[in-house]
Image (tube, rainbow, N blue to C red; front, side):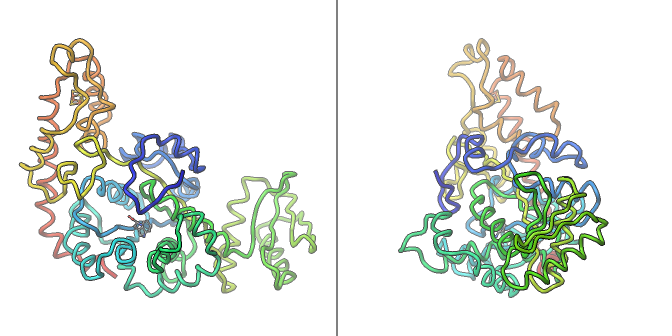
Amino acid sequence: MKIDPWSSTTYQDYSRLRDEFGIQEFSENLWKDLPHPHKLLRRGIVFGHRGFELIQDAITHKNPWAILTGLMPSGKMHLGHKMVIDEVIYYQSIGADIFIAVADIEAFGTRGYTLKETEEMALHEYIPNYIALGLKPEKCRIYFQSKHQDVKDLAYILGKKVNWSQMVATYGFDGSANMAHIFSPLVQTGDILHVQLEKFGGVRPTLVPVGVDQDPHIRLSRDIAQAHRLYNVTVTKDKKIGVFVKVDTNVEKLLDNAEKILTTLNFNKLKRITDYKAIYINDATEEDIQKIDEHFCKAEFESGSYGFFQPSATFHRFITGLTGEKMSSSKPESAIFLTDSPEDARKKIMHAKTGGAVTLEEQKKHGGKPDDCMIYELFLYHLIEDDKELENIYKSCKAGEQMCGNCKKYAAECMEKLLQDIQDKRKAAEKKIDQYLV
Ligand code: TRP
Ligand code: SF4
């Protein structure tokens, strides 16, 4: 099995996906102590992560951290696209620096749009919606890949540590892939890592909230970040904590510097073995690794190389389309667009697939199936904030007390409010775009 970020696959079994790709479970202990955790986190819609502990730690200790995500400006924005920005707005409210890439190079290289077309879609569709949904301009920049010289430079430079075999293994490219397409994952890596350059806030934990289809890019970015490090701070098989030099030039000098850093951190039981390019820290424990690594990252940047923190990521499930298939811009009846009129949205909801039984009698007797119901998904992902209220719907549906007609009406009402609110705000939003763009 392969995850292809450019295909339109739908995923069914998220826990299998998680296990197969070594994604960690986004368990309760990761989010329960965050300030007012967002419903997408609480409800298991964000189901997996890589390296979220770094973010949790930064939030707990009030250290700086960043969010970087991207939007693919292709077609109209629907509820499926809304999830990432809901997460971003939440993280902004708890103190993250926000960076949003408009993936115009990727849309050009992989989907055949011109840069002009993607610009139109970003400026008139996505960004106004983001603002209408509540994204604030403070500590927030939105930029176009094609116009960001630092990102493009970094993409090229980072490419030095990736070879063709790795690209084939990760993406399944073959001889017919065009070079713009092949290069686009490196641009995405440039997006993800550029926020750690001095100019953009320096080395710090960075979270990339995305749909699980983006995991290949996350793996690539994490590998590349690691590959550019000079030091590896880790625990060995026989449980010793060590700092290892990863390169073959200037080893002596790098070990000298490592010793200095460790001494200033108050580690004194150091054992240097130059042949192994190693310093063992006998008075450190596994809990110290992160802190030590942080100092080495910074020192590496100061010495003119890249000491990137490995970027963290969270992965969310995709909302199902109203018809029961994938929610997709190319099938308008499957999707609710943020620009749909409240009346159109109501009609789509009234036609949506539910988990109701064939007859009312039967539903009263055996109950409905909220787990297979698109209306319930709308509540779960977008329409109901209060967990108790959601639980009541779930239970009364299963008990056969709640009937689909009423349920749809309620969903339509909530959706009308949501869309009306976005539409009222979008007009003002168009005028504010400049405050967000770099
Ligand atoms: N590839 C993403 C998509 O298809 C868009 C994107 C570009 C992105 N750069 C990014 C996502 C950086 C996360 C981080 O939607
Ligand atoms: Fe879905 Fe509501 Fe019908 Fe239950 S009662 S199946 S939640 S529409």
